[in-house]
Length: 169
Image (cartoon, rainbow, N blue to C red):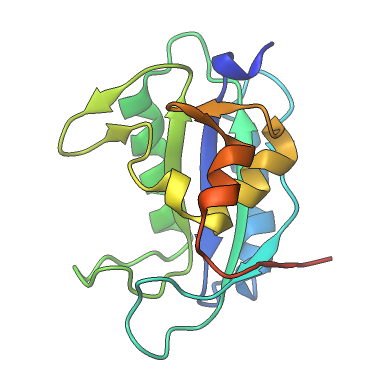
């Protein structure tokens, strides 16, 4: 398969969940994401990042990106619904506070080469290219030459103003 056949999902967490610390939560959800893929998941390293645009005092985030090969009958909307169900299973509570701390956050970055501009889903993700915590792990699995909109991931990283990430072992 080629990367244009994939859906890429950003994973983030900054509150402990039932599986332990945020990094443990990200690792715990991987088998459920694997179950949605027609081939082995592409899994980035785990990174730690500062909470960006979050309420004051928000804890650091653990972040990763996975690539999955959506099933033949999967749509961006059906995958998004499954991702939101997983967030709820892992204790995500939505209180309406922008960028509040969370046990698990799954963002659909791209779904094949499809675009969407509905209120529920914008594809490609409208802020993915601005966030080092998305770009760096994404580049680790898709490569520097993967194109997002009109630039490669490497080009977006050069333009990104976010602080450096710490890679978790």
